Length: 384
Figure 1 (cartoon, one colour):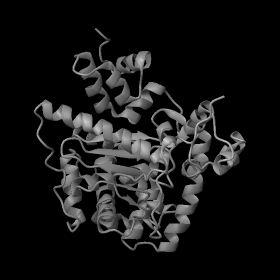
Figure 2 (cartoon, one colour):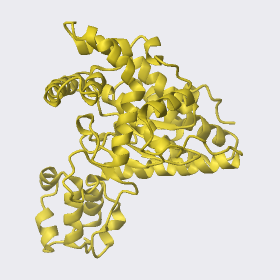
Figure 3 (cartoon, one colour):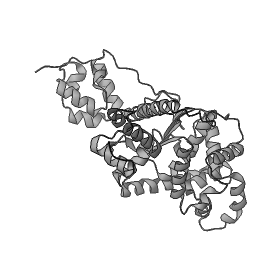
Figure 4 (tube, helix red, strand yellow):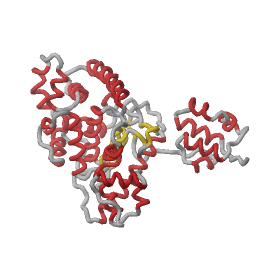
């Protein structure tokens, strides 16, 4: 039986990186001996351990653990100044989105597209009211746009669609690719932005509550205008102590719930039995966004906000547990996990022979018959 010489420090690094030490110690009873160097794993055992820890197999042949870093800043609301190691799930998701963005950028340039004028067009010092108006106009959204939707979930869908129509790649996914066993943790990140003048990409953690996703999207929009790539956790919908993050939150709040309109209806709403719900119905946003906005404008206290947020979070967790975030139609889910616009371009390029099917499979994470069925669900013709 051939055993593979692996550094104990690399095994320890992979173990800690996975965040599953207790579970892995049960699955791999020889793990203590591997760590001490008393016994080396077989190739099959090493392959199983690599898969269980979401670690590339080649890393185990290095003499020392590699230093992995996110290619973008990671802003945390409650940062303590210490460098936080990104999870394998976040790293792989960012890398996956970078590949998609790079391909889309090259494709758009070859097609003769011009850079998007709104990318990097604003500075964090801009007045939130002015930028919120500009963003709505760019997306073709009128004042009070959300009121035309039946529910705030419909408003969220409209916002996603308008962003894609404007040239922004929008991805909403709660797992790594299509692996439902690897759920993304909203406590680590609610979303991230990869800014590019041809193919800006925003990613929303679909494992997060849908109400929070609306605010994340608006926050990410501001990042595109400011030209700032970043990942963020937006804990309690509050930004990290960074001037751009603070500016993004101010703009997002104004974009969703304009200050002047909220001040106009607040006196009467306060007389209602459920004031937050009343305002939420008016703006077609969630109560969470309303309460966040009321805090920003000092219409409620920080304690009132935190009391509401804790109750709301418990309800969100219970609702997610009851309905199953990743349920529903697999092919319909791909419109969010891949993005309808990106999928159409990739599938079209494969159909025209401009992109190898192998590469199209890699970019979308869909293979063979599954790729074909998804193409058909988008009403794109079958393979020639």
